[in-house]
Length: 372
Image (cartoon, rainbow, N blue to C red):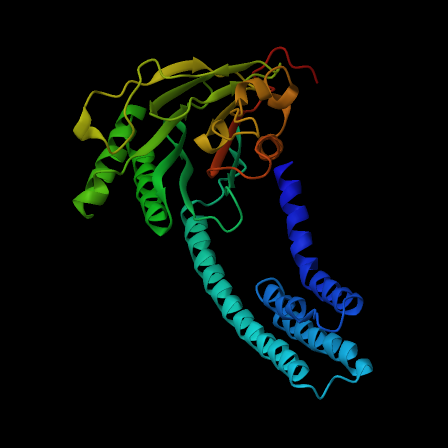
């Protein structure tokens, strides 16, 4: 509904310069000669300046001046001083409108360039994972909150290792290039630790130390407020379990092939990464069954905190339960889920959203229930 209202408002604004010229012409024609529609003709190019292209703004100014001339010539009032003043006023404002249009377009181009650079940096640190690694199908999706919004700090990474497929999904506090830099630190540390560390707990501690080193390079005032929520997952090859370490992040969901949805909350709540000065305790991985055909869904709070017009949060567990989503390919599942979240929030999410789905494929030669 909100998206539809925005669309209607944009259409009205695009038509407003033409409406102003039309209203000015009608007003000038039906009122006595002491009244003038010049204010409407003057406003038209000013309204067009931030909305139209340069060519469209010039055309609006020309039409406004021409309309005033058409109204004045039949009356024989063109040589009068007040009429000349009206024409000069409309023409001058039209020229100013074109200059405003040029400045607005240059500003938009600079903003677009900065946004493209930030998005390119984000894509560089958040490459798409392989669609298949071993016995797993994988898909990832990043949804910006709104077109033109600042780049956020949502992150994900997938790394195969001798201990199984390891995954991290997280959310760095803040936005912009600084957040993208922190994302690069977390993902770089994760890829190295996922290969080298024997346990998921050790991987989490490596991320903690990497963030601590990064904080030491920053000013104290900034680093004191920085933290990263994250959930790490490990899916051993050929073993129907999943191990999780959750550091203050929304709980993952496990989608079974029959449509059952099981949340996987942390047994013991833990602080986000980067907050060890508030308390230190050992990470403890917890295990859950993850049989063939099941899909592990990890996400950031951009999904769980999306609100509708009645200020109700989107409930991913309720939205996915009782349906055949778990049978979908991971990419199709994420596409449908992202569309539902945008529909729920009216197309205007408050925060970015990162999603990753890992499906343990059915191993036909291991599954005695499978029929050819």
